[in-house]
Image (cartoon, rainbow, N blue to C red; front, side):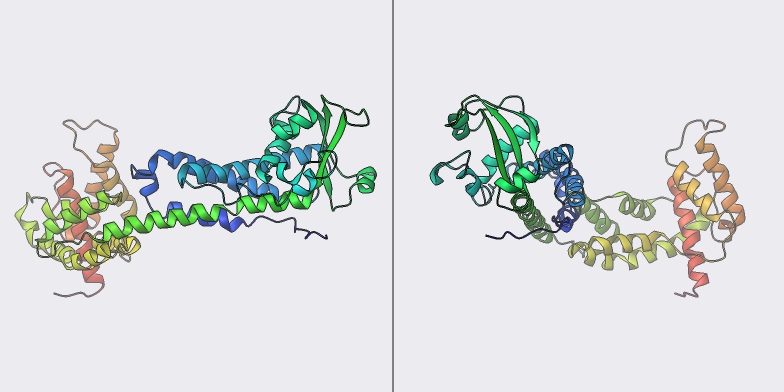
Length: 403
């Protein structure tokens, strides 16, 4: 029978990419108690599979040296074992092909093994046996019961590649295998044998085991969908006040393993007391704008639309301004990066002192137009609120927003 010859690029790299994309699409695998105990295994296996698939696809032609073939089998082993480990440990499933005898049975039934059909090892068992002789246990193995009974202990001096001799004796494409010395001699008194099969069948076997990664991807999709359906049951109480709604959204984020930093900043801007009465009108305009976006944010949260959630949150507190002074973006970075918790005594030369300096420069260059900022008496949350308020009011003016 003529066997189908595979292209050197014989493993579909997109299967690895799809698996990684699904795992990375939800935080449940890293954060949820139900899944996170095997998250490290998932990540390690993903990275190994990426490496192995790239290597095998770049070495998919018949190997020219013993070293090339040993490396090929080693990377193939990691693919076969990696997918199997994910199935057994993560999805709690078994391979579809655990009892399969599709790729290597015909070779086991031929010389020198001469197995009956019923005693032929499964494809997985044969591959384990061949792997042992190739690089895992080349100096002594008797791991397979069938071959132990036929050969006794076996050792392997090298793998066997195609040459004029193998082309004469083996009538299948791309013969490849391993030479073994056996404890038992055959009917001709020889203790030297060759376990040979087609490189094409080896590649087909690897493909069949690798493609089972699709089942792990489907398991991950199902896990995400089940959790999303559970999360969708929680709806925000929109009859509550704005601050209460924002705090409820924060609680939902925590339950969904989402980043809460931005929503906490929004809550702080809504709750922060003002030490300067002249800022009340300006801050109230900013706060009314935040309130105007809450319904839209609630819709996104109820719909589990994470991208839209993030976009709305950012739009509530960040504003695209034009023709600002030269140090505008640098000063914002230092104000929000260095002024986090006020020290009892600010150390000279510290980041905190530099943040205060940049706040004063920002105030003189721009913010004084809209608010009053006193870095000596105000805490940092109030300063942050006033900086955001100034930016919002400037945004309104630049875009001629009224009301």
